[in-house]
Amino acid sequence: MRTYDIIRKKRDGHKLTQEEITELVRGYVDGSVPDYQMSAFCMAVFLKGMDEEETYWLTEVMRTSGDIIDLKGIEGFTIDKHSTGGVGDKTSLVLGPVLACLGLKVAKMSGRGLGHTGGTIDKLEAIKGFSTELTSEQFVKAVNKVGLAIVGQTGNLVPADKKMYALRDVTATVDSIPLIAASIMSKKLAVCNKGLVLDVKVGSGAFMKTVEDARKLASLMVKIGAQAGRKVAAVLTNMDEPLGEMVGNACEIIEAIDTLHYKGPESFTNLIKELCSEALMLENPKLTKEEAVNKVIEVLKNGKAFEKLVEMVESQGGDSSMIKDYSKLPHSAKTVELKSDKDGYISQIQCEEVGLSAMMLGAGRETKEDKIDMGVGLKLVKHVGDQVKVGDVIAELYINPERKDNEKAMERLRAAITIVPEKVVARKLILDIVRS
Image 1 (cartoon, rainbow, N blue to C red):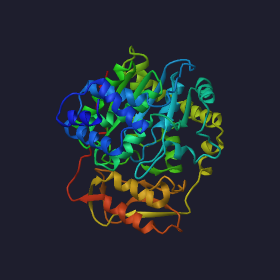
Image 2 (spheres, helix red, strand yellow):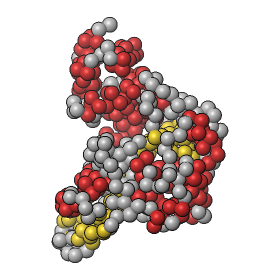
Image 3 (tube, helix red, strand yellow):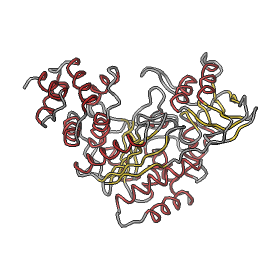
Image 4 (cartoon, helix red, strand yellow):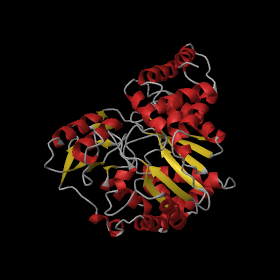
């Protein structure tokens, strides 16, 4: 069949067969289908959509386009967590140790940050000696011993998605629910975990701007997971403002450590309870929500979850003294306060702009080649719904005085925060839960 005919069929709103989708994607990976034809296909999907069966077929051919990470050597219930992207999202650094403490096996592959979103791998590399590059044998051994390992993605994991996403990014076809679902689930299903918890972000700092669209995406991903024989749950969470208080690398590790001592920000701690309890109920459906949450609280309060983080760091060659005494982590040379210039209530904190402010300070990269400054970042002292007066500190910026963009970063952060005269009620953090 001709690629032209496949594109025309989808352009006209007709359902594709599994063979047609498979031939198109495999052709794109091997180079026989050129960029311009795949661009046309992605735009056709963007405009006409795909049904659940087509989306599953697309996910499956993308999943099998490269390496498959077989976790059969890991004993127990293997679980993964995926976030659809956010600012200040250090969830894996807490969720992993909590679940490992409670008997689950967390075999996690994470990525690096680019632009306004931070990467788990970048944050962990703030710890001296920590290695995110393990062989398959080392990975399995670490998970069996500790219950937890976090490593970087392999070079040939789902190459179809890498090629297609790069194309979608420059052809205005990123915001398509079928294409987003296939992109996420192809990568998650290429690593053969038994369970998966999805943190689907909603709001100004997320791909999904509305709860309705986020629910559609979550439902589709949960169904794809079920078709693939995996246990999946999705939690819809508010990303109208950054998660927790800290945005950066070392400073987010500090917030994660505080949370593992049950002393972290309330909103972030509540998200951990929600995601971890869903994971526990995937492994043991007989557990009630209350029982699962209580198990999470117990290992946070008694310090066992923190001890598991220390174990993981030592297992992967890191200097655990930096975790036990986080004053040893990289830190900035100077702290600058951003103060309110008016009385009122914070009505909005634009997530993406906050993330870009942190990037300008040196906490993220604009291109893949940029070097990250692990010690810089920022702390949001005030949040949506908080009352402020002139002179109140809204945020603290941890800066390297030698960087030329510090002033621009501060002004960008100021512009990201809206203060209004009327009282504002913040949207709740947990917006919905979708289960298989």
